[in-house]
Image (cartoon, rainbow, N blue to C red; front, side):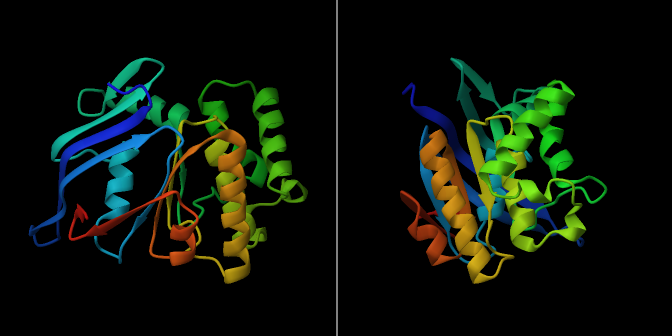
Length: 230
């Protein structure tokens, strides 16, 4: 096994049932190797399976067939063989998620939203707060730390969501249309942030997008069609 491989999917199939119990195939035999430091754009129109693939790679869902293995600290995590508690801990520690909509918790302030994954991982309040402040300063939103999501612009919300994804120093960042809900100015700011973060922290990034602007900043571009990677 190449020690630079971070995650590997082999022969992955996934289907979903509609309300009428009709089975709709979404992924149809995906093979994919992701190496440490990769910056990959998954491109293709809506409905081709980009989001589904991200959910499977992030262990938010499991494949119907095939295997997904994550390699970290000389250990192999086989998603199909691990229990829910182990996978939850794995997601919290090793994977950061950024979605089209920020999914910030409305009752918490910006800094509290960023702190949550660190607190769940067992950090002290003081340490989680220190790390959250540093991230908010780096992303130029420290002045909004005590504001709740409803008081933030879309671009600010997305920067808070990126900070939250980074706080546990994950091995992999999965981003699903991270600029899809933003105007062009805020989209450019978020893209610049992603570029800078990658270079500073040598992060592994996979971004699902139908935006050519987003795809063009990636090192590798994988095109999906009809549940397959072309």
